Picture 1 (cartoon, helix red, strand yellow):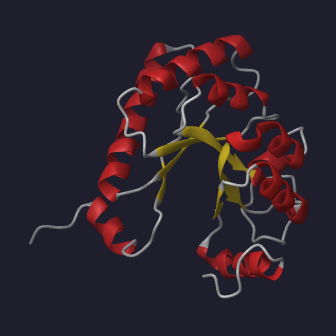
Picture 2 (cartoon, helix red, strand yellow):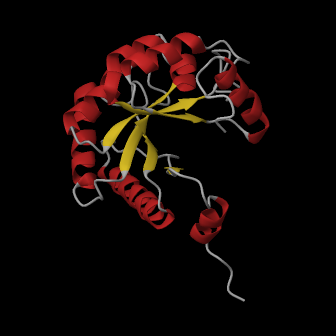
Length: 219
């Protein structure tokens, strides 16, 4: 008997779930690398993610921005990364949105400038509030104010500020109420997504519901 492939398995698991989102590969990938071979491999892996998303019927694809502080010049990264995304998006379905996620970035300026310079409606920022809190030097609320409506997607989880722990909402030290209020004001159209393990999902949903960010019985 033929074994179902991974797309079939995911489609079955996500039956009835809409909209659908996909997090693409990110390990060792760098769209702004000064090494053209690294950019080539990155392009191949992102093309794989796009093909998978189309087959899965996903509307949202999250990919890491990939910048590691102090490893590239600001101008060099900006130029190469903008060119990478302009080339990549040229033949992509405009109805499928891509979001560049912060990981090790210490402040939002470069990420915002990449997305703003490419200036395509299907390329936006995925603000990971936990990453911004534990890796950033800029308060999370400032990230939101500076990026504004460039933010199209948000990853929510909590931590103590010392490591990327992906705790339940309310279990760490993120100023979550201030973050949520700022997002509602500055990025009202953004998709909010919990990026916590199954063991932390119920507590995180309860936090959102009890603080008025999720309709009672909304899930």
